[in-house]
Image (cartoon, rainbow, N blue to C red; front, side, top):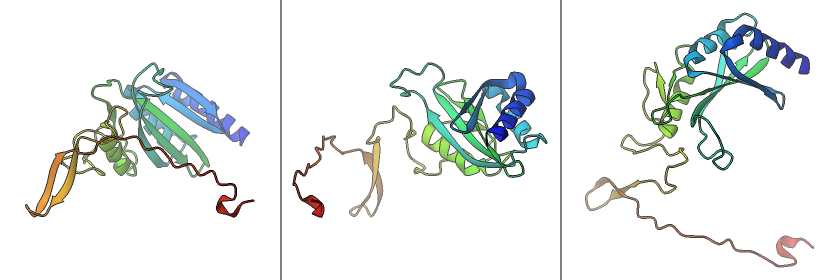
Length: 199
């Protein structure tokens, strides 16, 4: 495993060279970070270069770093993390790219390179508000069409903004402001000596 990672790391450093922002090797995995402007060309290189051959995109997700390390994170807020697999070389890679604008996060879509990115990009758009430039059908996938906001952002309220329910009098689904009152729940503590049959 170590020799394989050594080979992959050396190849990435040589092939990507000045396009690498960082390369981190930890826990038997390699994570490369690239600039958003280079992300599409780097992804194409990772897929097509004969020494890399990352044929499959196996996962893609959005990340909101605004609360990372108790808010001590310095840098851009939104990232897209992609997990790639090379079946022919039998190795994996994590590709990370940060959106350049925290107010309107945009990264290039990977769907033109790997069609498997389609639903993952729609999910990251829906939950984090990250726009994937070049995606043919970027629309919500998990929340309702009328949903306001992006629920996985760290600043999204836990109870949301609106709730949807069926109104039997109007005989239709209606939207209304959230009516849940925040409350503190204290867990019940059991202090029995023989609880659960344990002696």
